[in-house]
Amino acid sequence: MKIWKILIADDHPMYRKGLRTILETVDDMEVAGEATNGEEAIALCERESPDVILMDIRMPGMNGVDAARHIKKHYPDVQILFLTMHQDDTSVLSALKTGARGYFLKDADKDEIIRAIRAVTAGEAIFSAEVAARMIDIATRPVSRLDQFSQLTAREKEVLHYMAEGYSNAQIGAAMDLTAKTVSNYVTLILNKLHAADRTEAIRMVEKAKNEI
Image (cartoon, rainbow, N blue to C red; front, top):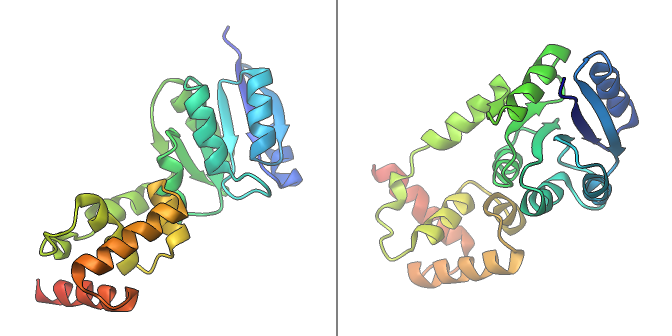
């Protein structure tokens, strides 16, 4: 019988303990280790070669998104399942762009967690109902209001979309997997191309376009 090695990465001791207790009831799963931040998760991944990592997003030091990005780059066969309290657009998008196969909220029950682990080990993608609804909302938001900005590239339109949603440069960078400097450069290009005096004016132009649809 194949024994799946599971690594837990979360900075809350009681939550780690709860996950360990759940996994210890499953015959074909074992806890390969526990990490309290991204750096520890990477180190344990290198040493223990887990099959699945249960990863929180916000941890002290290196966060879960940065750790997941590193792990998927260097250990692509390791499956990552995010278990977090956060379901905002930035968290969901930045997590999924790492190559993670699942995203659940921390209030998921034992059966949901076990089912999610089995799904990602089978190569499937799985998400909680709340996160799936969020993804559908993101995917179906109207973007046609940006079509009139033909002078912008597709990437610049994406940045402008996030600007109009009220994202900061740091949040845009997390959502698009870009550095803060790159985002700042995009914003400058957008303002120049739109002949906008500042960020506020550019956002106002987007809102005007939205109202004209």
